[in-house]
Image (tube, rainbow, N blue to C red; front, side, top):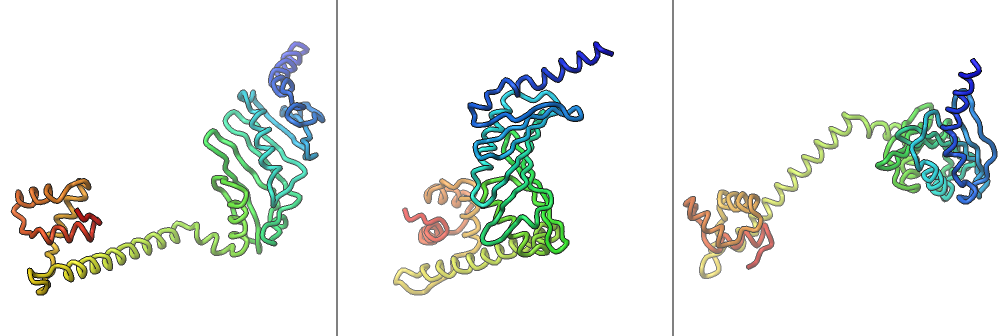
Length: 269
C-alpha cells in the first residue's frame, strides 16, 4: 500500500512539474497555491490586474499550454465592456477551456450580467477560439455557440439575442433558414429576369439598320450561344467566337456579336 502511494505521488508530481517549472512571475503572475483536489491538479495565480486565475488539469497536458494561458488571459482581461475578478482554465489533451464569470458586462447601455447565470465558456483549439454558453431572457434559454471573432462581435450577438429572444431562436431554425434561402433564390431569379429584359432592350435599341433606324431584336438563341461559349472559356475573343459559330452554322452579324460582348461582358474591342 505504501509503495502504491509513493507511485501515485510520483505520478502527480510528473503531471504538475511542468506547471511549477514555468516562470509565472516573469509572465506577470503571482503564485498563490497549488495542489490536488479529487485527483484534479490545480494551480492558483493572480495576474497584474489582481484577477484570480485557477488552472486545472486531469491528464498530462501538452507542452506549451502555459504560454497559451498567458496569451488568452491577456486578451480577456483587456476587454473594454467586460471585467472579471476570476477566470478558470481547464487544460485537456486537445483543447484549453476558459470559464469567465464577469463582475461587469455592459454594452450599449445594456447590462448583460443578469442574463448570464453560468458565466461564459470559451474553448481554444488549434484552429481558433469558440464560445459556448447560455443566457436567459423572459424564461427563455438561449444557447450562444459560434466561432469567437472579437469582443464587439460577441457583444452584438448577445444583444441581438436579448433584444428579441423569439426572433433569435427562429432565425436559427432549419425551417426559417430554408424559407430565407428560397426567398433569396426567388430574388436572384427575379433579378436575372430584369437583367435579361434590360439587356434585350439595350440590344434592340442599338441593333439598328445601316441608316441608323429599323431596330430589330437580337435572337435569343444567338445570345444564349455566345453566353454558353463565354461561360466555358471566358477569354474567348470575338474572332474565336465567330469561328465557333461558323463551325456550328449559327446565323449572326458582326454588329450583333459586338453588342452582346459590349452589354453582357463589357468588352469593347
